[in-house]
Length: 181
Image 1: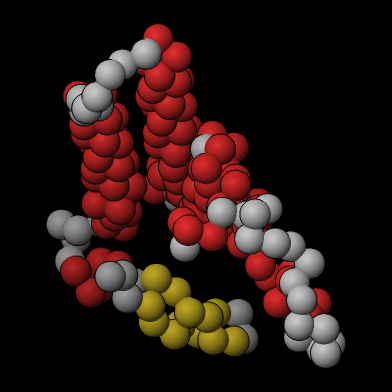
Image 2: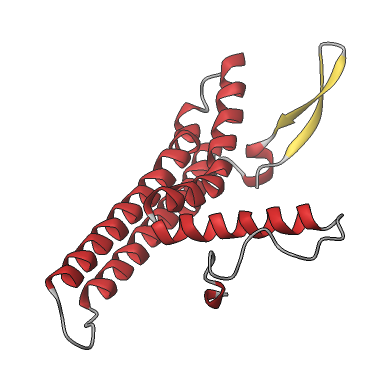
């Protein structure tokens, strides 16, 4: 980690980065950020892509027992395509969200006021990746969308019936398959 030191500067104290003082001239701030980039961005990207490739290959190699109909085969191919598209979207989403933060070490020599805003936006985008993944799943997976609908329906029923004496629910067991839960 780089070290910071309070330095007297134009009538006040300023917290300044003192990289060489802490680690010597052989280590530089650029080396630090490059290593952080490799460890926290590129290695994670390779791991995520590898795991999604493994998931897709496992899905592709599964054999379904029983008789096979043409319709079932088409549905399976459609599901496999959707899984592939979703996997690609998640990996690309990760790469896009972490791209600005990845550019930070190379742009760190820019000392302008706008650079501070760039870094703030880059950090927000990197953290937003966690919120983007469920959105991608929502777009590509019908069962995910159905599960979210049921979850919101339960939430609606629980909050709307909490303050009333009416014990009957607004939906019946036949309208929602509760066996999955």
